[in-house]
Length: 305
Ligand SMILES: [Zn+2]
Image (cartoon, rainbow, N blue to C red; front, side):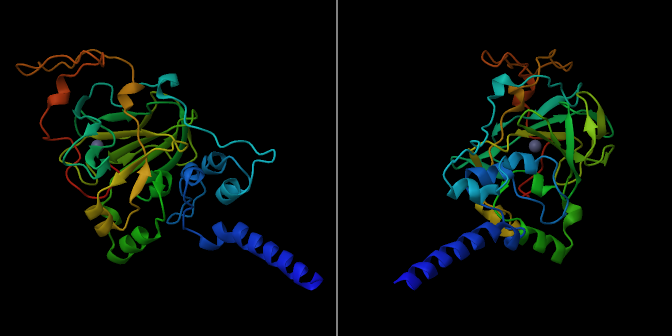
């Protein structure tokens, strides 16, 4: 009887040890659940540590400890600050016009409640224009292998393997992900060339790269996205895109950048006949009715933009 108890206790210890070791054993396999979303999938394809991911995890024991253990003196997982509390944002393409708003959009890869949804803001001027940081922060990732910092919920290993196998990395947009230092990350996509490196500190309004059309884009533009690794809401990725790209089926929900960007003068271009300002947003809305022409995300591609 005594031996049985000892063995049982040992079994528990072994099980606990296996559980604690699971994240490192699994390597690129991302944990699931709310805290896993906070960790936002460590880099499987780049191997680069993320300056914010260890902090984002919030707990030294990582996701599994937070999920499975009671809160004996542990800090609660951080939550996403309300967008209304965010300050210090500037327009990343100061003279651009919005060519594709955040929200329901048939041509988008993402879904919200089953409806196709554009998860960022497309802003355009001209090829080669200078894009600036929308907020001060620390650059987390630059280039095409940025998925570990994009808030995917699930393993990136299958998509990485597919891209390696078929040499697909060149199809992706060139992206910069910046930790805004306020619980949110800014995503900038479609650069022709970038001017910052991972780990670099930037200030709001600082030049970070040149407007381009890398990835799937109908023309030069900036796709600007904003999300909190602590957000517990999620957006879907269209099933057909998941099947083709082998990306995770979910990403952490994005917020509408319009909520944090300052008001600005109406675009110089005359609004089309019949266009009327939005009564609720207080933002110029003439561009929101623009057809999906140049300078927007092109088509379903399973890409971050
Ligand atoms: Zn876009």
